[in-house]
Image: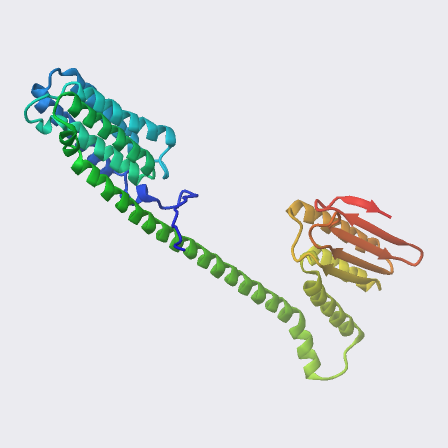
Length: 349
């Protein structure tokens, strides 16, 4: 089955057919001005062949107003209400000029409105309203053929006035489809470029995190590893420093989001008093807001400051009612505190 390519602009950066044609640029305004001036020139130079003059003036105003409306900036497809206004302009101009066209002789440029209306419908197809454009073409054809039959020229003469215009609409339909395919490809390439840039940025961010962690590990461990390689027994103070460094490294790996400077400092001091401290990050990321993490940090630091025995702080997986558990096991009692995603206490038992 053949896949249909559909262009659905979803942002200011999306490309559609109107953007490819640059209708809102100075060039588009110049073409619009030439279109209006041409209509005025045709109307004035052929007004002598009409049975009455006012239909030409009405047609010029209606067709020109529809052209101004049709080139205004708007993502494709063109707004439905405005599209109906363009179709209505085609119908009105066809009716009023048909009332004044000569019943006999050569019509010539007096039927200029057919070409102008064709360009309106042409751009309506380009802007994603092909069905309405062909409806307008059918109504214009019916009005023209009907006029030709009423004045005695015959339906063939009416159709002959529109053969070029209808052919141009077929070309517009093919051209618009080709442009939509081009726009679809441009948007697809843009999306891939954005995804590639995002992937590259994420990869670079990951690399920077690894470098930062490697730097932290080196800062903590290299001096003690150098001391051990140098040989000789370690003093009690050096052994304590090694234990603190090992605990901080373990916290940074297992605790991750919980391993903030304030928590690590409080954990180091608690371990210095003989408290067993365990930090666990089973969530993989911090809480949704920085304020929540600050409240959790303050609660954990306060608990570690007054703790005796052991303290286990766990950041729970997302989707649970509780986000953090703090369990303190002391000589005489066990305390369990639950915090929600905002860092507020749910229960403390």
